[in-house]
Image (cartoon, rainbow, N blue to C red; front, side):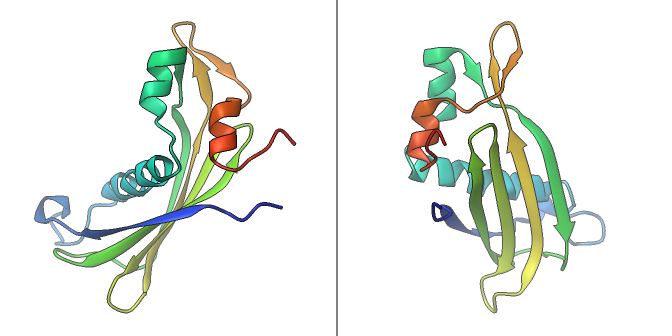
Length: 140
């Protein structure tokens, strides 16, 4: 079995991410996940946008989930970790957001992406070989 690939990004919570209660608005957690997911893919040499330009394949997110554990506030220094769970039929990435100071877990989440052929918008039920191999997933 392959070892799960992961990548971490350090981030400081900006003021404009707060809601009227002065904590991070729940929808912004998906933005944090995206920062780490993009960094994970880039780290392993996967550029989904250029893949689209070359092959007309899109990779939309079809499912998200977030568990909010501890609220984030302005200027909190956080570590956003993206962990690649699967890259065979769909890209599945788990996330963990924790405080940089003490490691306290603030949120966990997951996103799932599929391959879609443009312009037909037809779902392809596998991740292309080139991407799968760059992420350490064989055909098996």
